[in-house]
Amino acid sequence: MPSYVDTYYTRTLSPDAAYPALSGKQAAEICIVGGGLAGLTTGLELARRGRSVAVLEARRVAWGASGRNGGFVSPGWAARAGQVLRRVGPDHAKALFRLSMEGVTMVEDAIRDLNISDANVSPGILRVSRYENTRSLETLRDEQEREFGRHLRLLVREEVQALLLSKKYHQALLDEASFHFHPLNYSRALAREIVRLGGCVYEDSPAVQADLRGQEHIVRTPSGEVKAATVVLAGGGYTDSIFPAMRRSFLPIATYVVLSELAPDLIASAIRTRAGVSDGRRAGDYYRVVDGRLLWGGRITTRTSGPRDIAAVIRREIVTTYPQLEALKIETAWSGLMAYARHLMPLIGPLMPNVWSCTGFGGHGLNTTAIGARVVAEAIAGEGDRHRLFAPFGFVWNGGPFGTAAAQLTYWAYQGMDFLRERRSALAA
Ligand SMILES: Cc1cc2nc3c(=O)[nH]c(=O)nc-3n(C[C@H](O)[C@H](O)[C@H](O)COP(=O)(O)OP(=O)(O)OC[C@H]3O[C@@H](n4cnc5c(N)ncnc54)[C@H](O)[C@@H]3O)c2cc1C
Image (cartoon, rainbow, N blue to C red):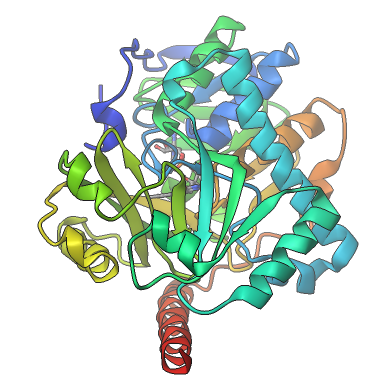
């Protein structure tokens, strides 16, 4: 059985049985390729509707991004609100934002209904600004209250600095309804529920060949095949070229997380909140304190290199933000791949008759995989067409090597803009 990458989550994973590899010829109404949160939630939504499902996972359940992320669950999409608004207009953008809120509720409901206590939910996400930003945070707070009934609390600089002892920070918006959690324990609980409802989950079962043309589709792994009327592709950033139309529509982007040594007192000299913290930069940092350790994520790159040198880069970022953490040692570091379409929105919809895509959730996937899965399941079950809200964000070519270069350049440009904005704010102070 393939093993998980060493992360905070695998170190704190609850004991759980492995699932068998697919063997021989099997049949299901729906075959789902990919056992991350997109595939698992699609499987669960369909199993709850009485459909027979088979989930094929190449390695382990939530081995990819779903089992190694920051664990922040909040409304929104990987695309910024302004980008969505410009493409689809105000009413449509609001409908999409409401879906993203429903995604948060779905995760909360699953944790409660399935009694997933080892999801270790901790409430509160603090979005902090690294430059003077009172006016736009007030506007955002008021707009979110008016349009969506969300209550965000604006913290002034003194309040922020009582929680986060860093000179880098100005104001923040505290969202007490959002939360952070243990995504790997959560994911594995979804897999258990699929099986409890009669569905099948196969680990160590990469789809290596697919025949998607006839009435009945056949997906093959090295040791078996699944015959299914409907196939859902949910391979995230790990989708390979056996699904060329899918693979051409997104770029895999790597991002990184480090976990510090156990040092509760030292960390408390810098961070005095249990909320998760993310800074408002377009390519910003996010972090939280877990069991007396600091879990800190950030940086993206189109190179899919190992995380070792990146650990040093992130350590510098930690110390620049909190010089008092100079002595804090990093115990482990890991990376994960996110799938980004050019428009930064998920790729949700039919790719061809009875073949659905549920992928491309980028760096904001914990709520969006949930709702993406639900709208795909609704469509497959003939219950609704909310997936059409994603139609303006279609399967656009990712630009190949030019797309990769453009993504990296855009990230560097964002970093440059963030830097200039901070400098201007510091000079004006
Ligand atoms: C380091 C990191 C931090 C993040 N932090 C956050 C956060 O704090 N909050 C947030 O909202 N989002 C965050 N995200 C984003 C979020 O984790 C992802 O958007 C989400 O998990 C994507 O889920 P997925 O199911 O689409 O893909 P994945 O979780 O990557 O799952 C895809 C699965 O498909 C499998 N697979 C691929 N090809 C095949 C095949 N041919 N056959 C069988 N199986 C296959 C893979 O092995 C993999 O397990 C983060 C991502 C990363 C990488």
